[in-house]
Image (cartoon, rainbow, N blue to C red):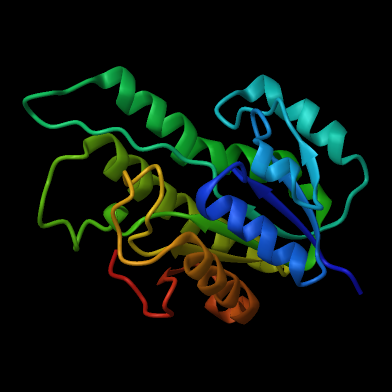
Length: 221
């Protein structure tokens, strides 16, 4: 039976590769974006554009566009990273990251929860930079705060959704060469996407709420 996968932030980078690879595996992929890129349009996937995950008032349109779709996997990839330090603090940028990186995924889950069924899976794209125990370099205040907040939200979702039979994975993709990282990193988006899909394939209810690296190792909170 064909699986339905909904992915936010599928315009480029890892999100685009997730859409490509899940479609190549035969899934019915629905990409949710603000504005569809040419690369996304070139894929054989359904596209819902005009959706900003930081906006409460965009959620009714998302629900309407999905109509009575039954979602097997909801992967929340949309995110943004700015850079703040004590010498260059910008609270508006921090708020922007919190709205998109933390509240955005939670906002979409709440909007689409009744479209999910027992056995469904939710993937949250977090970052190792959301780990408090692993922070030995400081700075990046907004990104770290927003991803730590997403980790906390993901753990609560795992607890609250367990009675419904829905599992949640909290996933760090690795240090990936994308526009967000200015091309720096250890792996490229295709490899990161492949590993993330493997983690989603392996996700079981008893593992829900775990903070994983895409290589399968468990990360510290």
